[in-house]
Image (tube, rainbow, N blue to C red; front, top):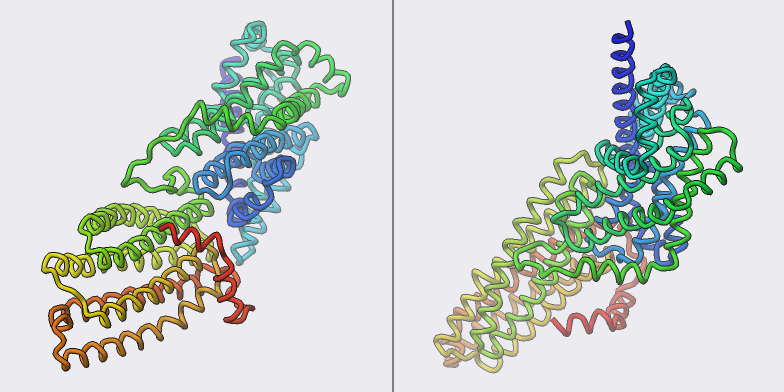
Length: 569
């Protein structure tokens, strides 16, 4: 009979644990689908101030009920260059505070209304037809399942109060501080949830199976263990991602080392604040995380310096994408932002290649041409990897906005690739032929080609800036300007043919090169217009232009920083 009782307890514990972890996953997925696409904007705009960053980190983690989820989001945003490492550190400290809300809710015995919460969430999912409401229902259902799992585990643990074997095992562990911390850390890492670990520790304290001091040691271990997941997921990632994960680990480890010598006085303080064991444990978790936030927040600048010393920048491989992170594909709202950043990088490289083409013809320098051809090989490899990344994002469950943006980025990527191919397969060959044959354009012909290239370059520059800024006005400007370039191409072609009738030798020698170069530039302009159309129709959230063409032009002229950046290409 005793054997059957143990068997039932173990099965209930496993089932309760499964419901707890599944509930957290369901709730986190639902909330990320509802608010994930807005996080990039919120975190990038509100984390300039370290105190606001602390609050934002706490609120986001309260929403997702997972500091690990917040850390993963920060890893992606830092890799993408959306926020700096300095901005991340306060958010991480805030995330650790936010994750303590679950413990307080357990102490308030929310577990007693777990089933009604599941019922409300399931009803919303079943009767709602709109995706947004279904996701809200998903989040509510996950929240209920989380506490239902805890309730099942609490009921299963109640008979253990009278089990001598279990008491002796916990007593032996509580006598050994290091064993308690390490065991809790490993267990938390294995289940990937500090909230789940803290919940179990609270249930043990509630059943009076462990003392408060033992619970504190286990809580410290659970806090360290929750940082292992981020470190493991950052292995092989970029340095910024590794620094974010390391910051989380060092904050937890440093806080644990600071608190360990004072566990006795800390336990007495907790007993003075609350008489209930379950509230004492919940407060132990909350006060610990609030404490390390207060201690470490003033030293974020020093923390950045330490992290950069521990993990210095790696030399980036030439054929390696700058922003893409494979581990974040399962978080589409972040992965799309990374792909967007990588495409902006590729657009800048294509812009540089277009500028270098003019230098090749101007200086007749084969070295510059070889650099252009090599760069095109590198960009081709980056195009393939970015396209594969976007394809895998499209296989994830996406809402309409995410799907539209992903498809828009695929179209932009393909147009940029076509521009690179035109430079490689057509323009580079024309330049090589001209240099090797020693041909010279006629003065008037060269002036026309130079002016046409300048018009094309300005068109590409505006399209690139529209992509960077998500600027509908600039995209519209590109769309309206491209037909003028097409008309100019026809005029220049006619002018060239007229010079041929005059028998100008340079014109006759370079006629094929001249006409094919005009055609290549025209084809590039058509792809640039296609990119602008995608920006205006699919990538801009609110497609409207409230500025006049004169204001847009003035904005371009006054943008000194951008002008300097382009002039250095």
